[in-house]
Image 1 (tube, one colour):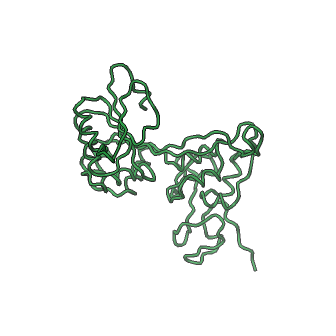
Image 2: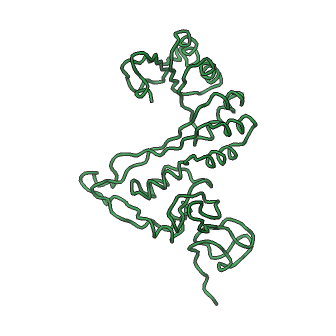
Image 3: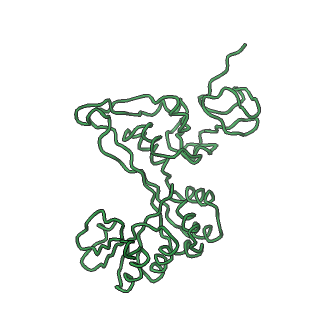
Length: 297
């Protein structure tokens, strides 16, 4: 992002610990806590130099967060990082640090969550059938998996017989729309914020990862290694192949029924279950694509 913005007339200052890349034309400051050169201390001095863009290596405490938001209030573009699991939880993290909700709602422009997954080797890639355990973990029914060409690397000299070569990014981009700003200011929970963000078009890390696995760019096993398994993880529609939320009753793209709940009690069920463990309903009463039928006595 810094490389995309830098030019001869833009004053860009970074405060990092440590400086990992030396960027030409950028004023970079190395933090040294031993002599009192902290994030907060540097930012106070940097604001006097009238920078256009400020990059803060990491927001770790309230003091740093307050100065960062103060800089944003005075017209500076501030870039920084926060250690969280996904994009919506970054909003919760800032509030937990002590930043007032109205400031978070009005000043945060967007959040990008990212993960790196290993890419399937392009020279030894081949089709594969994921294990039932992997499909269950990702909430993908066996019937849906049959319509998708998953791939893996067999191993060759090019990839040192690892099956992977290079890495690809998984991204979750939360853009603070007027509606999202309103619910943040009104004290929405993290789950409410996530639901609203998904409804406004945000693509989750899980959805982006499943899409890349479907395209053969990475493997199901690699996705399970990197992505935290959550209830908001996406699955695939068995009819049109689009990535959809696991709680959806129908596919919003083709209107195909994708319910994975018990008809009797409405509880969520797993693809390999033959009975509902909540109400003892038999499999033939369960609306779950690909569910095995029990043997009749």
